[in-house]
Image (cartoon, rainbow, N blue to C red; front, side, top):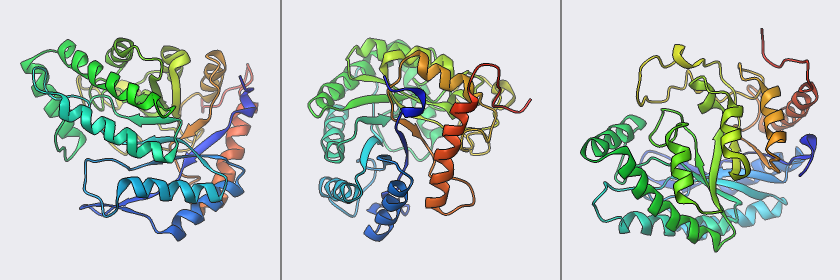
Length: 325
């Protein structure tokens, strides 16, 4: 296992645009400029997202994925993970074949990028959803007519199909924790789902901001994931659990809470997180769900973000605190 300071890092590289009607590829010049910034910062891994079948696209997804991969190759970059959108279940008792077909198609498309991990939200019902609130409302209607256990059982069978398709491409499936922002993504339901799937390449993407938003220590999620931690979405915020979301049940994410700040700009204790990664022997890359640094051009921002993470690691020795007291 690489030492703490030796783990590779990966930051977001935007490759897809969405204009409200269709997906489109960003211009080559824009993708290349981002690639150069990442490479100049000494990075060899990137995080991408946006290839899926939930919305129409102005390009062929397979050819688009291949084209993105070629652009990354020009700069010696590899895809650590691709964040997709995929339906996970139809209502229990309904035919699941359409869900499973989309899952297989998503795997086939995203495999053209060669990612280590394919990340998605684990509780998305089949159908068109305009917002997180719509996802949550659909899930609650389905559960009212069946049960949480029944939904987990259907999701288990479907994701198992996806996992077995992904293993043919040497890909992990990383289900993202969302707390109560979306279904099947909190400390109660997500571990139940992953354990029920019981496939060696199906595990977790741990999002630090989602954990912190509900007052859950990031390290608690890291310990739950253990050897099945395949991806991280690290970022910071000022949330504090009950003070941010005092109501019970599912809630819609608010940008004022899920701020996506660089580590150290919020109130997460990154000393504990860094030591937690060591404790579970996470090999990396460590993924950051942000593009650089506030108020700076991308290249300069990435250089600052990388240097600051290395500084946090050095500050993370016992006896030092990384959060404001």
